[in-house]
Amino acid sequence: MRTRQVLIRAAAQEFDLRGYDGTSLSRISSVAGMSLGAITFHFPTKTHLADAVQQEGRAVTLAALERLAAEPVAPLRMVIDLTLELTRLMEQEPSVRSAIRLGRERPGTEAWSDAWLPMVRGLLDRAYEDGQLRTDALPADVTTLVEHLTSGAEAYLRGRMGSDPAFESAVAQLKRVWHLALVGVSAEASGMPRQPEPPAGEGADQEATR
Image (tube, rainbow, N blue to C red; front, side):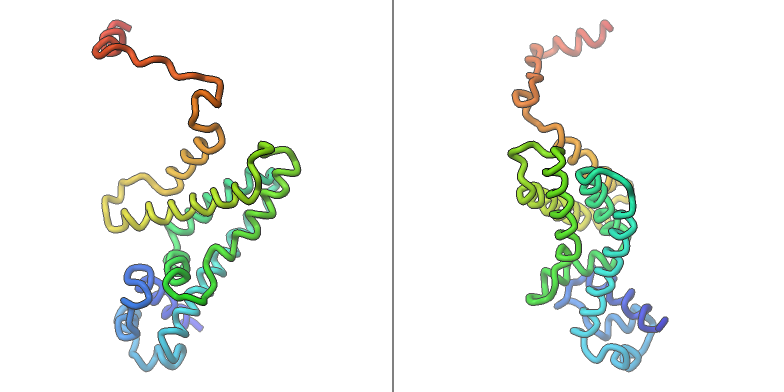
């Protein structure tokens, strides 16, 4: 059992970095420090190993959501917390990132979002019924928003993998984006029109005299 888990972890790292087509069993055997025969004993083909990695990523995701669902919070708050937890998993769990990538690159296999979208839609239906959403903020549309936010978080992470470790975490960024989504970005719609910009230099002069 331990050998199997070591292989799944090694495969998850490789699939995450190189994708399905760019990963080979020989490369995984090198990363895992095991012979090719040890791999094929547990996973006869790369397809079998990719299936196991996707199942692992889904299991990790479902376990996290189960823990989250036990929290006594309102449905809309739960949806926000859920997206933050999904983003945390993307940051910290190679099996989750691999499950996302493999779901895109292997037609006919289960998408990672299939593990959590039903929960999101159910929560948003409840939020709508409870009056937590505006009447024109339909659950289906907010579900689409959640899909875009999580996809954006993954794209942000992948664009910065291997770069400066001091970059802003995707979770912190998503918190700010959620704030904008909840309060809106239109000053007119919020009833708080923007103040006109001061003439060039005036603002700096006034600031300096305070």
